Length: 416
Ligand SMILES: Cc1cc2nc3c(=O)[nH]c(=O)nc-3n(C[C@H](O)[C@H](O)[C@H](O)COP(=O)(O)O)c2cc1C
Ligand code: SF4
Image 1 (tube, protein in one colour):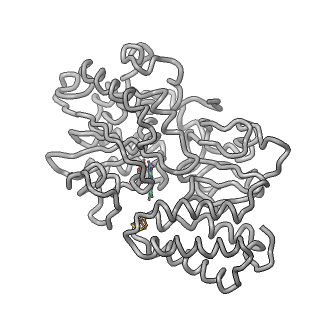
Image 2: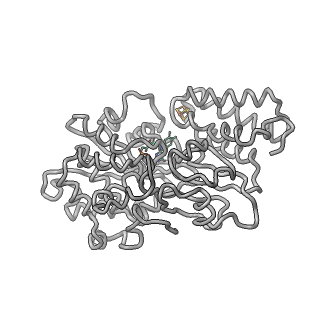
Image 3: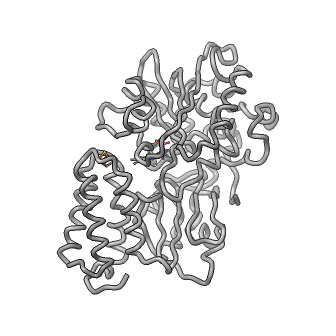
């Protein structure tokens, strides 16, 4: 992994991920100690002032979420770390767990302290089962050092962390489906309200955050030089982990300051497209993300700039596709993914995904009519406004953005 800056990833390679003593020797747990001397509301404010947005996809204001969770009064509350990382081309959370598991355990504990929770759960995607021993070891060693468990640091704070594994369903990254999966039920999303912060896991008030979101917090708490907010600008302060993949010479996870251009990420950090091929398209934020073409290269990677350019940060992935893959084939692959991963619970998503796939396949065979294209757009639009969960709402982002960026492909007789 190469880095542009190191704030969230500053511990990578500096300690033995199997040893808490090694972590403590580089200053580990200073964040929790600082936190436990603070009022929870001040911790939430610190995160809000740094304008940290959730890194799981929806970019919800994290300080606000912690403050809202804290405000819910209940004798038993829980915190969940979403380590499902199911978006395509997204692998930053894996690197955070692999290289810095103790920082994650510390961060979840800080969240527990902030929102007054007694239990934390890590929901780890099935494909990351090789990381289970690492996390179980980190939990055990933190308990042995009285940094987790009952009466942490003899301050009367009780907090336990439990590790759960998914069974390989993309939809289980959605908060309510994830909760049902932990409860042993079929991993299907449910309607909101009630919101999870009021009634989540086992009907207890629940605060859910992504691995990267959590991982920022211990560093932020001891950032006396205010280094984090010296990066980026406006609503996009700090740094971000991006998972760069596809047709690039040096795929990997890079920590970038917000504001780095897309060109610098792909052509400097990623060293460009191999084999003399040209750029066909870039997809931002996983399979549910929108796509663009080379016109986006000089856009700074910030929430606002990407939005203005028609895409979003989403899961933080950047998938580069070169000219050997046609836009149509790319969309058909994306559609296969969603047809497979739809949980089938609601009609727009279950039927819509299948019908769009049928039309895209017709296009590939040269049999689609202009009426088919109109129907496809209509179905995609209906799905985005009437599906029960984020999967159905965003499954057609790639298609709808492709229709804007590559309109000629959707004119019958056009070229892919
Ligand atoms: C279909 C679907 C899949 C999702 N998968 C993930 C995932 O793998 N990891 C994740 O952190 N968030 C995922 N999310 C977003 C979560 O629902 C939730 O917003 C997030 O975990 C909250 O954490 P954050 O505020 O720190 O981003 C997914 C959402 C949807 C609709
Ligand atoms: S939108 Fe799709 S994944 Fe979500 S509940 Fe409906 S069928 Fe299931």
